Image 1: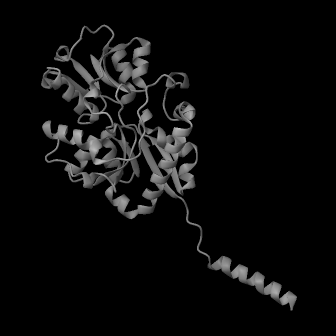
Image 2: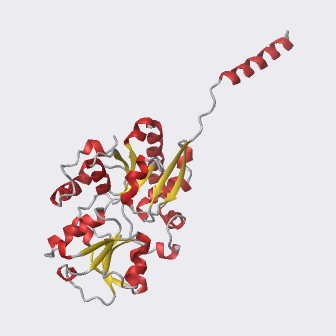
Image 3: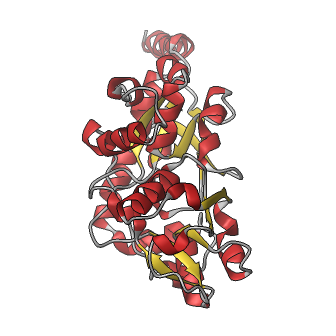
Length: 312
């Protein structure tokens, strides 16, 4: 009898093992990012295993193109999550491309300057007006840097139409300023510090200060169709980013080592970089200024529909 009970129990366990649903494989997600410190929280989520913890198999892919190309990469599904700026998402939506912001990269803080308008070391420019007739490079026409530069030029008495603004890749910025192929650039960390430290250029203005404190610097975006098809994946990505933000707040001393994995700059220099504040949540207040400014500059045909561009 005892032997029969033992065999019966073993068979029951075996049957249950066959009946149990197989463990679900982790969702494979490619994050396309650019070499800026604004994406630190995602770097932490990857390195500290928070994506794995929430069942998301994330690959962080350094993008070769500027952030303006992210919507097409998302829609084509060559990446599933893309780092970009608010204006890129607003313009995509205005053009009928369904791309939504799923999380922040960072937000601006008064007195913190991870971006600056620099000119070559021998430039005589002192004011916005002095840039008329000059060539200024920035990473993406119609992007955040472009929109804020135009706003700064207007506020400070220059005619933006008289400034030759050209598109460059972020990695090119120090070399183009050093070689004087351009007269200046909107430089982003970590490349801003390299320009200043090398003596290739100097800061003319913190032009991005025209944007209110607390505005989004970079955001993570997804295609609308992907969000509809993968609601659990989106939920898990956000949970992982929230865990990573909590880790960052508790262990800021580990930030430099983490960023050294993903940013093309020595860790010793990373320690000197000004940092954006990190806040995963995107809300309508953070994008209102940019939406209004883009209407003024005729970069949008209508005010941005906040509910259409921010994923709930």
